[in-house]
Image (cartoon, rainbow, N blue to C red; front, top):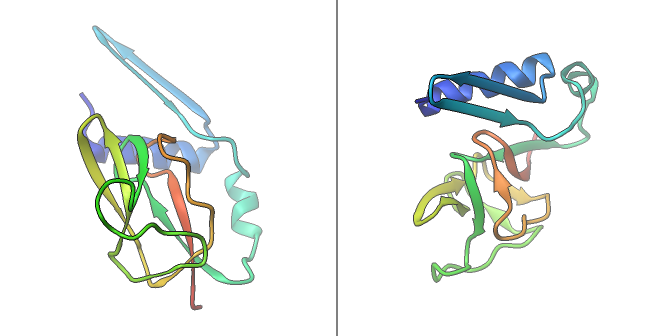
Length: 132
């Protein structure tokens, strides 16, 4: 069985080497990791963003549940200001929820994913615009 650190290392290595799919099989164990298509790491490194951004990354593998769905908190929308550590939503596996929190002070720059959108550990769920 793989723990979160193992999965993080595998996903980081996949991103660093431009690998989109990784399958590991052994005995009665099978693991398949698939990363969404995106720019090659070299191309991403050359692009200079006009503003500073911070990625709110998935803390686990599961389906997205936005803040305000059923927790009594206000719903977030693009352009809303958030503070470091503020709850943005959850990544859930069944009844187990992992909190998705803001990595920095800023405003939500991306669309809020639809409830039920599947994310892998470390995938970008939301992007924040921060002060450079």
